[in-house]
Length: 102
Image (cartoon, rainbow, N blue to C red; front, top):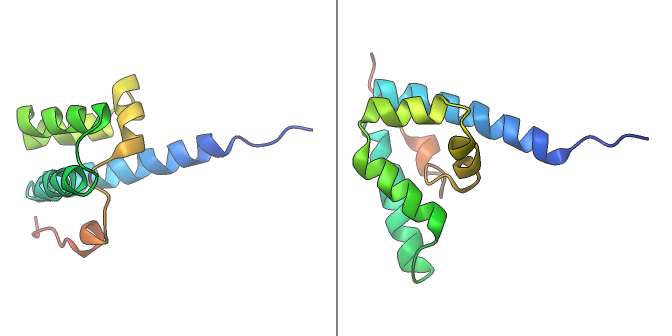
């Protein structure tokens, strides 16, 4: 009997979420500020950082908004790995963001 891999389903959901985020960022680059705030909150709350958060901080600091969107859209090993610790998630902030009309 073959059991479905629950991680594959979660990975597919995360990829789809990031594709929607990429579209939001292309319409309203200020969405990136949510991720920056979340990283700062997490570091303050849990007293430091971890390698994934540091990678996200570098991405958000060094890439343009279009490049961040392209990264979120990509299926590179790094993008797939960092989806597991996305700073775009957090206490219902993302769901309350209303991108500016295009």
